[in-house]
Amino acid sequence: MSVRHEPGRRRMQMADIARLAGVSASTVSRALSGSPLIPEATRNRITELANSLNYRVNVGAASLRKRDVQTVGVIVLGDSLQMISDPFLLSILGTVADALDERGMSLLLSRVHQERRQQMTAMIESGQVAGLVVIGQLTWHDHLNTLARERLPMAVWGACLPDAQYPVVGGDNEQGGYLATRHLIERGCRRIAFFGDTSHPEAGLRFEGYIRALSEAGLEQDPRLQQSFLFGDTRIREVIDGWLNQHLRFDAIFASSDVTAISIMGALSERGIAVPDQVRLVGYDDIALAAHVHPPLTTVRQPTEAAGRALVDLLFEALAGKPRRTIVLPAELIRRESSA
Image: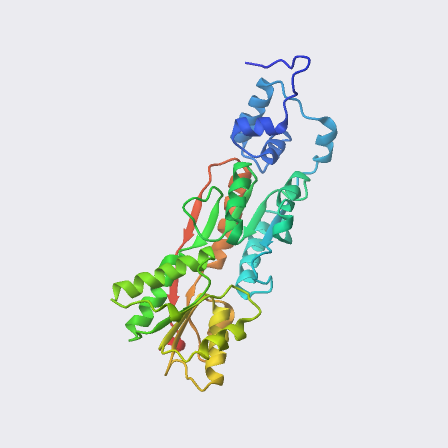
């Protein structure tokens, strides 16, 4: 059934078509321009809906979109202190770039701060990028849900939170924290410290796994052995030294990132505390450097190659208007000498 646009009646907009079709406005735009990024069945469904509503593409605007956008925006959220030069982040970026290259797409890297968060929507609406790959969540979780309700095509790397309305790829952080802590317990450790900010979604889940392993072993969690520490905080040695200066009793440390674990290893060495003879140490991520420090670092591996490809797959599914999916990648404990 067609709808006549009577005098005084608001003209049908692309956003209206998107809402009715259950896809993003950018997906409608590409479907109506015949973009090969959109599956034929989705293109036909959107075209038929537009025709039934007597929707006509604005010729002037369409001419600006004539060349299909071949760039994906990769957003690093700016209110995390994690630096773009962080080894784990670089590994994710590299695999995303490889996966995009295989699809004939390029990458535009940008850091977006809280006060400029509307930039994410503007990048797509302006035609600068086809969609977004977002690294991290932190305090942005609610905003990401808002963007998902607005059908913004994106895929997010982070914790797989139960109320997330956006496509997420993430490691099994709770299981990873459990494996790391259980391994230390099996090595005879009983006073295991945790380094990580539990308000961070990923570190928070790793902490839950740490607590689960302690509980299963009948060990009480000592709050003094929990040190809050944000990923990428430049005050890393100041925080570590301040904690060590309390002269607490501990026989192992589980750090929620390899960068933190390697910094802890250096601080312990300067104080004459031997790893693993006096303190066993486990990190998280399995960055390339982890195997080459002395002693080599036991860690929980995150499969970054699979992560990059999964993020690109979910983004293209979002561009095609497919249902949202969550991908949880397995955690794997890599045993090395720091916990021997």
